[in-house]
Length: 287
Ligand SMILES: [Zn+2]
Image 1 (cartoon, rainbow, N blue to C red):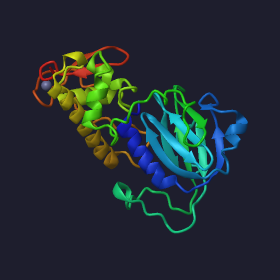
Image 2: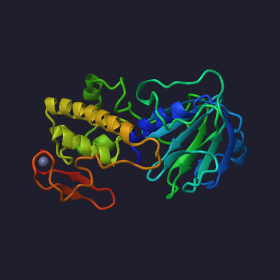
Image 3: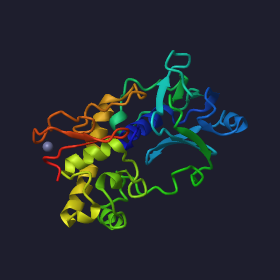
């Protein structure tokens, strides 16, 4: 399931590749995925994409007169392709035309990226979803109240609004086990099953500890571990993911799904519990 680091890369990369282009065609292969009438879908043609962003575990394509939100859930993936290129069958594909004006040169980590499509050439954005659990929603500009899950979202786990003070204040309102706490999107947005394991390993905290048992310094440690784990993952994924955005890179994780392997920190055997959604942790160094 895509989590904050996966989608942060995607939002940056797609913004650099696609902003300023107009949608010239929409192909809805799997109508279950796009929560819109055929007329609403067709009305997307002609819209210009202003920017691509992320909120929690959702991606937003900000079009000129409406927003298109994507909640990839379990198996939703996005890819970029030259129109006509053979790739896994997409549930929904948006063809975007070339963009004119002065050449765009993205700043930051995307500067000079060789995979960025040339401005004058069309490009296709494909949404793939074998389990069809993910959904795309059309919403008014800047108003995602009707998009399921959005109104309840807490601050983004990597966002500037989430200071240590804000974290301390919010965490008081959320009892229960730490793993469930980190995955609770109303507490902080963007963390799922994989990165909650990673953050707790980094913080040396047992996933089944209750929040009420944490000392003040452990609350601060959990905040610091959240920030560094996500930032480190984003740094790695920037180098590893483009241009194959549909492939989820997870082999850098230190504890998640590594049950039976040696803990990289203390050498003890990593435990793994649960069946459908597993929790991996080190009983020896996570207390
Ligand atoms: Zn360990």
